Length: 310
Image (cartoon, rainbow, N blue to C red; front, side, top):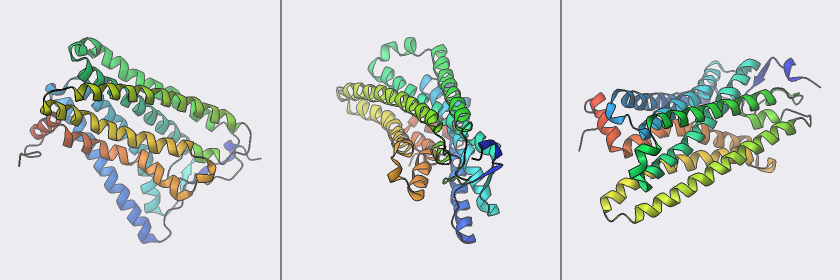
């Protein structure tokens, strides 16, 4: 039985065999990565530079943009480099670092999305108490808690995953080091420890999801009682983008980690991983900027002519 410490490197999912298809994969990932960098970078710069946007909602949005930048930068550049160099290798330390940072960022992002649903609930359902319930200190503490929980969860999963004896080779059937794919390489019953950790994490995810659903039920009940059609439209325009991003993130991520082995296939695993790890960081800036008039106005000041009225 080969110990995990004796594996010098891992082999990631083999990409299309011909050189032309490998270069096409590189170009597609490069386009998505540049879009994510540009979009999230603009959101961070706009919110940081415009004091009118120094409110709880935009503070959490700035944190979301930072997490999105980190998430996509953890996985995509290595995959692009491998395509360009026509290789599958990733070092043992590099694989462990990917798992650590990806789990850290993706967990923190989910907690942050939960906090953002609470922010929308207070803003719409309890507007008179908004400044009291979500003061600047409270917002900082909530964001710090999301980042800290992400770090703790990542340390637990990374330490446990890479303490397992891996004796089923070193080929990871994914374009980055993903925990379910690494667990397939273990032939020891000790992998059940990681399964239990995943179960605990998933239970926490379910609790957060129930909280989010309850928050949005209350939000929609309040919105539907708004007599002004313009006010109703503005409230929906604020909430629906968050709900769309959250739905994509949760549904594809849950499928990737919870689907039974009988449903597993390299193509399905690849599609799911792209949908929950690559698409949201690139789509979040587009969704939020196009549906948010205040952000568009601030961005037009930062880049004159960016969002001119037709």
